[in-house]
Image 1 (tube, rainbow, N blue to C red):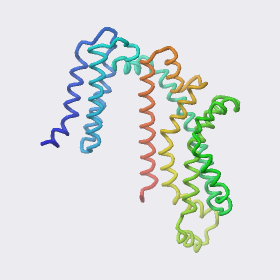
Image 2: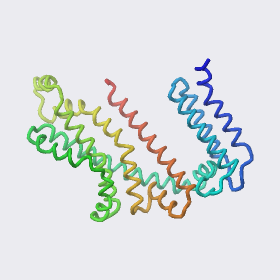
Image 3: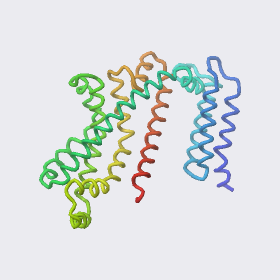
Length: 296
């Protein structure tokens, strides 16, 4: 009985939220169309994952939070509506300001994509070189363990001053955020590979390049993808922080620009967009992981 009530609770909260949205709102509240569409989309996603207990719990939390937000801001009203905007006003930004939001998403993803490509190239390449050499590994890794914990965001102002453009500085900082985890995972994978695997490969008379392509890289692939997955949220945080310093586009710039004009409705909308983008990126990485590492 309790399990049935628990399973039905998010759907009941959904109905309560829809009913609340359709009630008259305080003056200054925008059209509820965009908000209602998003709420229905959340319910559809919940129905698609209704067999997962975590999805039910997430649905309860999300709908309860939205009910509270809607009731306090749009139905009762608050004194400082500029600081505490109604959900209708926030989600309506996706309709009225979608061009700037899409431009910001595109700008941020371009920087992110280039930084990821550089981090993968240098992280995997240098990780292989260091991992294959006992002398290099014993020399480099103690230094890396000192440098790698330093958050790249700390030296981003210096990078902006030192490098020729803000774009170059942003790419450098994001690349360093991702690079260390890939590099260290690569070194550890190469150093810890079962020697029986290496000996078996040598009996096939594989040359060094074939050994790397057909043995070391496939063996290290799970660690590489896991390190990329872990780095996504951190690197996006660094990206948005860097964009707030001196960019003229991107999601971080969008939030900072509107915060300077006290347009907190757009600020909150920008925060939601960042959350969605990071979630989609993590989902794509999980999909790539399932496709590339089917034996795991």
